[in-house]
Image 1: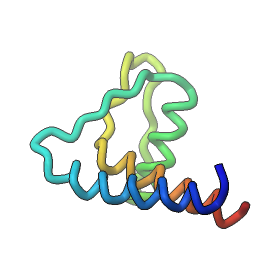
Image 2: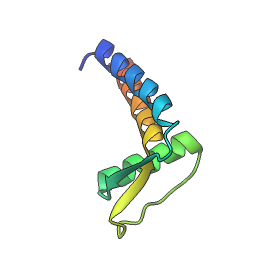
Image 3: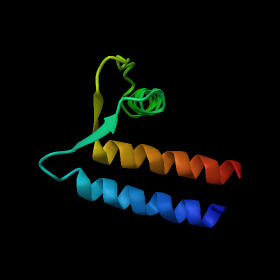
Image 4: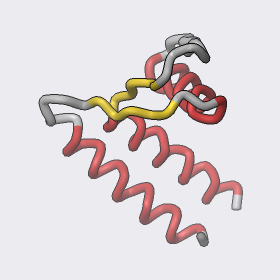
Length: 83
């Protein structure tokens, strides 16, 4: 994915995040894997300033769909900037 494509994808994710934030239920269920725990914990730290630790014993992680989209958009933009 080139820089322009990453920025376009980030823009779409941000617009979708705005739309999804107005839904009645914002749950997005992630399987509780080491990668998803790391993603969720970093997202919560950056987005809310909260230090969250997800226990490996939980089967799934309940995330806010719009917050996840917004965080992924930020990650795409960072990658595009760092080339």
